[in-house]
Length: 144
Image (tube, rainbow, N blue to C red; front, side, top):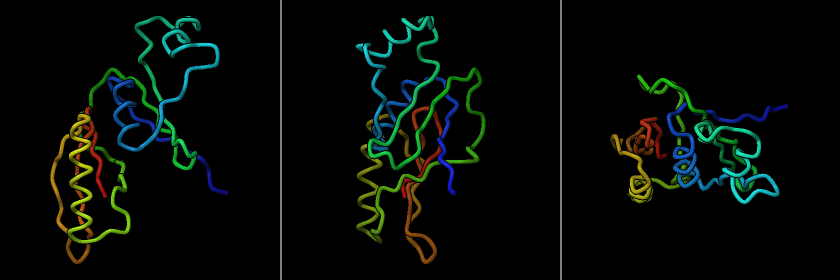
């Protein structure tokens, strides 16, 4: 039987990373626990000091199909290329110029959210073409 899993990111600003990736993937931030108007009130009621309110965050697929993505604050910064990255499937089933036009449109949308374009690989005999980007904290991902 297949196991459920979540993707976990170490980062400096979990709240900002969660907001970026929620917008990038069409995911949602979870609602605060019942009886609380927001997460600040819930964390305060649980005795979490204000300086730790942004130590972690999570997002989830609203359809319940994709994995949960969890962001946790760590003291060290990113120092090298990711050994694991996300391929954001922005143009499934498309090929050639149509595919690359859709990927360019998505790259522009994500740049407005804080992502940075790294480079574009053109379609060839072995690959349909991708755009390599980084999220606001420099984690690599591909628009595929």
